[in-house]
Length: 116
Image (cartoon, rainbow, N blue to C red; front, side, top):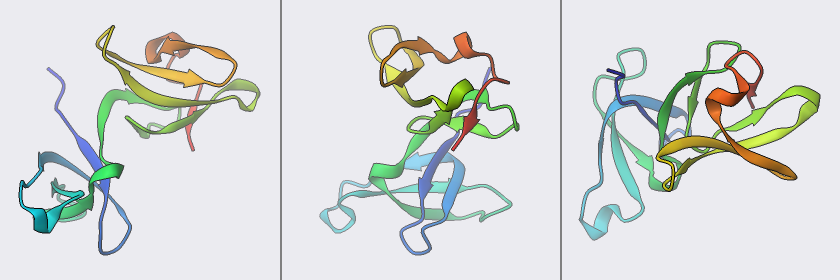
C-alpha cells in the first residue's frame, strides 16, 4: 500500500514542506492555513503551511525521480504543459492540458515528463 504524502508552502519561509500528516484547524485564527508533519530532512515537527498550496502525492515520479503532487505542472514532449488534478468522476489523478484531452498520469509513462 502506498504511503500518503502531502506538500505545502511554509507560511514563514515559502519553502515546500513534504510530510505524511496533515491537519486543518477549525480555529478562525488559522483561517486559510493548515499544518503538515514535516519529514526528517526538513523538520520532525508540524509546520504551518498555506492551505491553497497543499497537494497530495500522486504516487508517481517524473523522469528525474521527483515526486509528482496534485497541482504540479508537468512539461511533456514538444514543451507541452499539463496540470495535475484529481478527477472525482474517475477517482484518479489526471493531467489536463490546453488543447489536449485530459489523460490519466499513467498514460504518459513516468519517464516522459518533468515537474516544472
